Image (tube, rainbow, N blue to C red):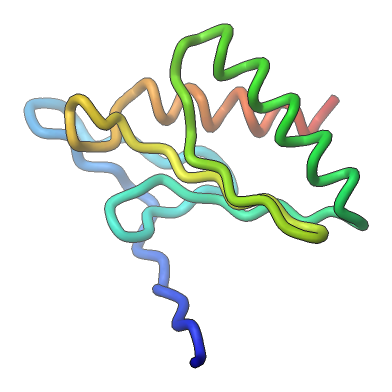
Length: 102
């Protein structure tokens, strides 16, 4: 059975009662989630990245859904209690981007 991939929409986030905000660099909105896929040379490097994300998530108390496989990590951000993408998600995305810069 072939898995279909959803196409990303324009990376502007619309939040009820607020001005639209741009998605952080590299991120897209897929199925009402802020998402990004990161590639790595092997499983160990991908797992180490997940460990770094986990530390940031605990620090800010905002936990993404993480999908880990050989050479990749997919991160999904969504504020469950508000049922939408919020500033918490965009800030977490920026912090995750910063992990790749270190």
